[in-house]
Length: 514
Image 1 (tube, rainbow, N blue to C red):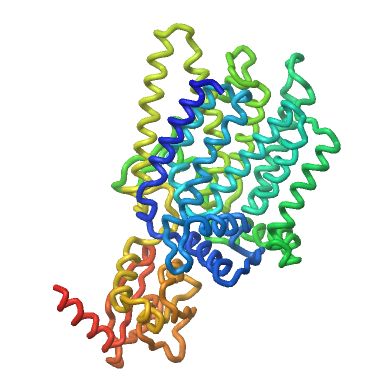
Image 2 (cartoon, rainbow, N blue to C red; image 1 turned 90 degrees about the vertical axis):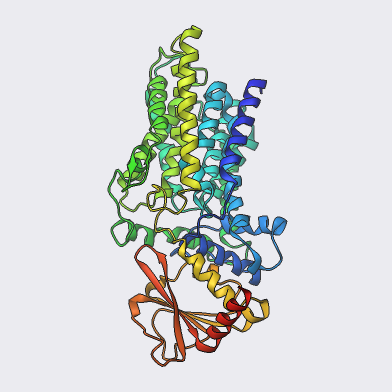
């Protein structure tokens, strides 16, 4: 690598870490993050993990976090915190930059540096790098698959084919939507061949040696078998990895609350303005990507990289964007899969714009404008990830837990401040349709916690956290008092009831400390 490329990548890494690492715990845990954390708890405390084809996606996040926590975490799960868990997705978010040198000869060194900086400052990339869910791992493994495939076409060494196979296995073991990326890649390969009218380009650049193909497929299957069987303890896992598509297809057909119009993703990325919140836009990336696509298909354009590879990335990204837009089941973090391709193309587009003129009188002003717009993107990334991390005007939050949950947890901590008291303090949580998440994460230090989908026959305990949907009025017997009303999510409220003596002790203690 040249010094300029190394310097550019180091600059991008520094920006990526500066935006991703600070105040990782500022946003309350989302439901999905809490579910992942509790599944990790089962593995951590009971040594077991079993893939569930109905929900929760694949095992890579849980196993990788398990290994990560063995390195840095405390012994007891109760002492885990949000920063430790979210660092695993930060690592993969930054890893996208570290993988870029694998395709420096395909995209061009200048485009690689531009793409690295855009990955570092993209608000969507930054925000979801700080989110303990599967998406960033899927994007990273997908990119590694493409990069390994490209390297294989360069030297035909079987190791790259095997790495590509392992990466596909990791994609599958991360999230079921990996099939969309694979389908887009296969379609892009065939369309790219149809577009290939340059006799100087190698016609069979994507062809595979049969033995190498078998090795890649074997690596894929072995990876899948190892992970989905939970390291050979769950024989049904690989079958469930196939059967999982039946419930997911049912949701896509309409059995889900997550149905949104076709432009749901693009509207959040290009222009988003909610109420009195600021305007958010990553239109710079899309505009530069369009320039990159035009350059890829224009044989007269000056490209530093490999035109065929860039054209493949363009087709892959267009197809994947169309697929995700067409599927009515949408959650905002899914946009990362095609946004990564857009950023690679934006890197190409940025260099194409800079190289439109050969004189400094063109290059310097264009570079300065792009730099200024990139700094503005970085500012948005900070705003969306820290000041607006859980704000309803943030384009990337979705059913986000309210900051008020921290007040609820603080009050419970003061009611039972010591570990001994937490071991014996009984909490009953009542809410319909599992609406109590992410409380299992926040109550992890209490040993006597139960959850009910309704008000049980005997609802009373030291403390009760009850959905207002029940109108429980558990203070009517005067044995308990209602000690607060807390918002778990927008329009979702819970009442906290506390046993009278426990509340009196708490109040007296609070008065003595003043």
